[in-house]
Length: 283
Length: 173
Image (cartoon, rainbow over all chains, first blue to last red; front, side, top):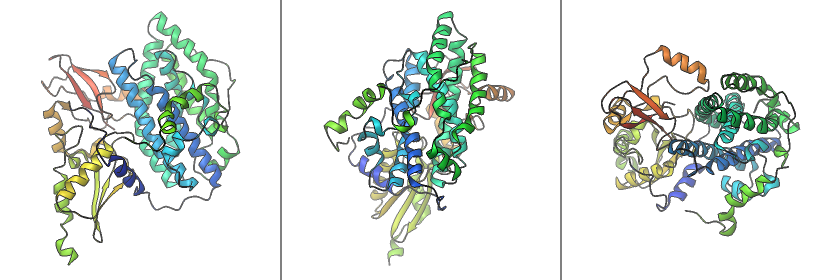
C-alpha cells in the first residue's frame, strides 16, 4: 500500500488555508443569539474534541496491538479534524481575525472550555476505552441533535462529524463489552475504570446561562435533554459487559468555565510547545 | 473573447477523472465522488471539493493535485471551494471505482452497512441480510474483521479465512 504523502510538499498549508477561506456554507440566515454565548458553546465543543483528540493520540506507538494503535490514531485524527471545523467556526464568530490554530495553540489553560472527562489521564487501555465509550455515547446524541441546529453552519459540521462518531461509538461499545465480559482481570480493570470516570460524566449534562441561551435560540440542545438517551446506551452496553452502573450522582464540574484539573496544563505544555517556542512555524 | 478560450466544464470533469487519489492511486478523484461541482465564475474556474473524513490528511494534497493538474491544462484563474454538506458518503464511489478497488486488493464498501451508533441493533439487522465482506483476492465470503480501522481513515482491516491473506475493506459511511 502507498504510504502517506510527503507532508512537506510546498504550498500545502497555503492551499489548505485558501480552500478553507472559500469554504461554502448554505445561505441560511443565522439565528439571533447572544454571540458571546454562541462563541462559548463552540469553544466548549471544539476544546473538548481537541483535548480528547490529543489525549488519544498519546497512545500512538504504545498500544497493546498494532491494529489498536492504528484505530486509536484514527479516532484521534477524526477528533482533530472536527476540532478544525468547530474552532474554525468559533474564530469566525469571534470575528477578531484569529484562526482555529490560534485558538488551539495560543490560549492558556483558563481559556480552555473542555469537559474535565477528556483531560483525565489515559490510564491503561481499558481505562482509555471506557472514557471513550462514556464520551462517544454522549457525543453521538449531541451531534444528532446539533444536525438539526437553527444555525446552518453548526448543522453541517454536526452532520459530517456524526458519521465518524457513529463509527467511534460502535467500536468503543464493542471493546467495552469484550473487555468487561472478558477475563477476570479485564473485568476488574474495566470496573475500576468505570468507577474512576463516572463522576466526570455528570458535567456533560449540566447547563449554565450560556447553554440555556444557545438552547433557546435552537442552536444546540439543552444538555440535560441528552441524558436519557445517553443513559439508555450506557445501561445497555454495561449490562452486556457484565458491569454494574455506578449509583453515585456526584459530578465534578469546572471545565466548561475554565476551571481545570492539573492535567490540562501538562497537555498544553506538550501540544503547544512548537508554536510557543517557534511562533508561526508551519510544516 | 474570454469565453471562446474557456474549456467546457465537461472537459474539466474529464481532466479531473484522470487525477488519482493520493492514497489509493488506482481510483480517481471523480471515482471517489469527492468532486461536487465544476463551474465558471466569470473567468475563474471554481472546483468544489468535499472531504471524505474531517481529519483526512490527504485533503490538502488532493487540493494541490487538482491545482497542479488544472494548471497543467492551462487554467490560469482557479478557486477551490470546500463544501461539507451534504456529507460525503461511500455511496458516491462510482461502479467503476468499486471495480478498480477490488482489482487493487481493497474490498469495496457494501452499501447500507454504515455505522449508525447502535451496535447491537445493527449486528442483528446485518445478520439478517447476506452482507459479508468478500475477499478481493479469492472471492471467499469466509472473512473476519481484524480491526475497525486500517491504513487510512477510510479503511478497515480484514483477513480471509480461506486464502489467509489480510486485506483492506473500504468502510461504508
